[in-house]
Image 1 (cartoon, helix red, strand yellow):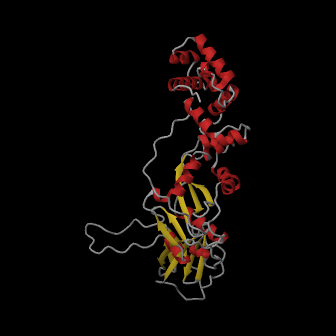
Image 2 (cartoon, rainbow, N blue to C red):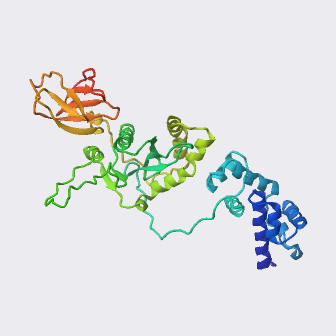
Image 3 (cartoon, one colour):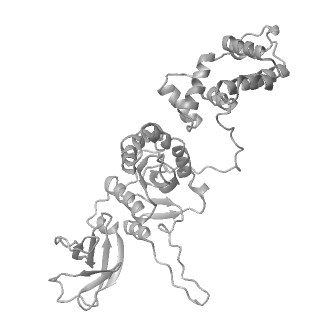
Length: 397
């Protein structure tokens, strides 16, 4: 079987690359003729030949080779124009899906990627990093959950926000996702509480070593002989009360599934928000909840390796207290306690005549309310500014 020579193939590839750059508007047609080393008239002939015969028209036709599969020039110009004018910030995989779903163009992913790279619209891929061994997934949902946040310019025209996501290791199903000003204890605890209420108690949570997950204070100093043991964080305490293990990772590579999810979403989610004209955080969160996360769970999840679930029933009477921020306080002689430069007056109670010098716990709930508890009993409810609320029922033990 007769093949084209290597120099002929290389010249045809060079001419095609220059033609695609000229079609995409990167260079002028006169500049394209100078790069190839031909006249303007010859440049027009090359373009007509490419339009009529495709890639085969750029090869030496004296060998009488049969034409390979080619894409019409009109389709090439349409694809390059769509990417340049409407989908410039899309990655190649996302753009290829848009061509198929929104424009009905059934072109292979490899051809689209090659055409965009040859036209200079997308950069070529860099070399891969060192070889790493893949960690197998957990066989059942609920055995291991990943929670992490990513700071990125998610909403066009706004400052970078944190996107906090909670997903399952076995199926990559996203249980919760929300844009927040900053990833902190309350944002993470709100998602964990919602999952426990809806699905149940899970076995382990895999996170980074942020200060809201694991303590970074060790009490060591130049004059400290025996530093005190650091106490648990609020999330560690809440998970410990449920019997859930917290596993802090030591590197981003160890949290590869969460990092790959954010890498995919950073290349797709801002563009989808831009196409829909979403500019506010509330609208973006509604889009996440109603469109983006359901679509991800339909199209990008895997079935578990084994049937069943590892979630345990999570209906507990003290769940609200468990997922709240705890502050230990000592009641003053006038039955008041202080918190963040505010004074909270305890009402009279049938439990004791006075709570002076008693150790109580101030529960800062996720909805902003404050509760003062004495063991299993509730002494009072307050608004965030310290205003007393209507008396609530005391909590059961």
